[in-house]
Length: 288
Image (cartoon, rainbow, N blue to C red):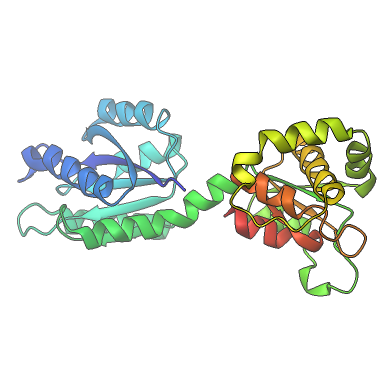
């Protein structure tokens, strides 16, 4: 999963260290990239309304999960407030060790303002090249990236969860509220009707297309069983395309035991997760 962090600088032209603000921003972004974070370095050092507008324009193109504010010196705090009027992203305030720049002082000041207006933020202090600081940014950004990744996921459930497995019960409203995912409920007949419409010749052709992928597998199924399994794969794949599904859960036990397993494996190769027994939470967990 990609983690996207957008970095913006903040500094005051009258303060010691202002001329070092671009270097601090660049070094911070480079260290994030070194540990696998996709860091969008806007290259903007905010110090007046024009540079705030430049940052807003850059951030609207960034598709970031979090906003990293690299505070090089003491600065007027309203620049950040103006920025956040137009950019709705979780904020990490990044301060740097130096006695004369006022970086840490400014971050504390901004933190006090955020606290008073009820705005959440994270705070990191350390040298720009410190890998531990970069890792902390990554750790903070990860859950936001996860939610942003999952919010567009649609999980299809065919036939609902099986009886006798209460522990896999789920709350559709909670899934939508906390992950943003949409549960798409379908009758099992929608799947089985598609399976029935696939001929043996079509199934054999599909098996031939998948033979390289299946060659390493130890096949103990009968020819008829293998045909049926590949038909379920084709039907599930078709429905995933029709309903834009990124995950699915079939209520397979007991009537459809073993029928969807091959299809799940093949779909997993294509990035679509599948869970047994209609276990929607499991399907979403694998998708994460």
